[in-house]
Length: 384
Image (cartoon, rainbow, N blue to C red):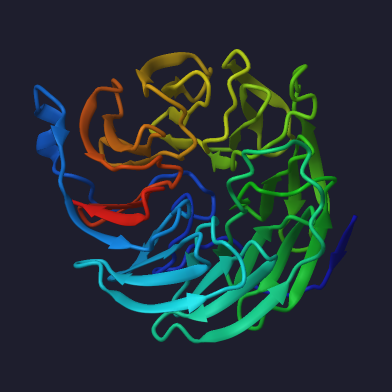
């Protein structure tokens, strides 16, 4: 099921300027930066935060931003990748692709990588916006269901290798320098989840209902875990991107379960049952807790990472497809009711929020006291 090209080098050491969906290659959702003011933690009532700036794309903005140095990189349904000044939101450059951008870009020291809906993976010079290479993936497989196919897999960059899933059902490993294919692994359905990379293993979920653990050097499978499925979604499609923390892989499924697996063997540690409510949101894991949003259950959850026992639940008043990010003592996540919220990690208490006029499917990026995210109202936002 795989084809490989050998290469040398150590695996999975994050670079100093790397930015990507889930913050790090392990996709823990924990970002080493500063969040909103700690004074919010002591506020008696949640505080409405006014945007510091907003940038108009005029289209749906479901791509999740990343921030590297002083630049915000984010895609839009208009097919453009935008490089925005983090301080004032002014465009530094734009790069036009031939497909919608619902994946999150990834960066290394001098380049940005993004996957477009036409099946092309691009490397772009981070400073100038000039193209460096592009790789076209194969013919898309038919979706196993109709509707709600909102996200593409986002690239993850680790030690000179770009890992990304594609609509042709493959997980790809590409050399960051020139786009050369190092290996690819074929699943049985579209790969919409973003891979996680930890300890020489690539963990990737597929819409075929499997989570695959692949050798990062060769692409050969180490183990495969099949979700339970349910009568409405018997495949148990995996759109939620895995997070790998302390030897455990956490991810959600359309069958309504959040899963915790042993990262070495794929053995199930525990499951949390959302009673059929999809878990498309990708979990963040920090300090012995797992944070994740749910669809029809309309909640953001805080679970014990060791047991899966619920510690708190926040009523989101609507679906939560956005993925949480943990910074300091707060959890940041977007809601389908149009608000970006900050919750206290320990209690789920609402600390502060930013209101928009559109649904938020974008996941936030938090960097040096500011939070960046997109909305379906046609704007990219920054709040601080």
